Image 1 (cartoon, rainbow, N blue to C red):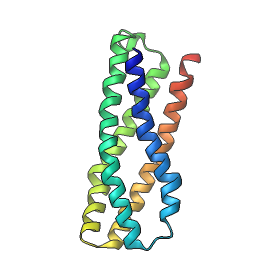
Image 2 (cartoon, rainbow, N blue to C red):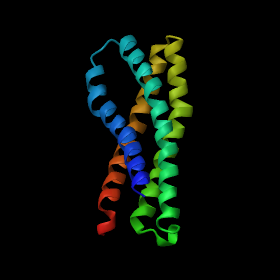
Image 3 (cartoon, rainbow, N blue to C red):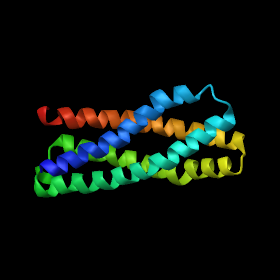
Length: 150
């Protein structure tokens, strides 16, 4: 159980921590850059961050369901906070899937074609999805840390 919890928490730290850094620090720092430089920077950042998010999603699902079935004996034995974490986590994953397969692909294509107005439009959509996912991720951390005391 300790290994599953550790892997679960590490995956959360990578994903939610990465979103926090990108949204709260990098976005503010990259804002004053010229559009071509700023969009190129975001393109390189996402190309390197998204494989970590994919790994986190896989690890979260494997460790989370591993704990549910190995430790709690299934969902009947899991507390409400486990159900809440799972629900929010699934919403987060669906938002990431949408982000990756829709605006990220369009953003990447626009940057590679050097069509910066189209890239900027997609980056704004990515920003909004990341903001929503960041809020959901922080909420999930609160639920996970406090839920067993409800």
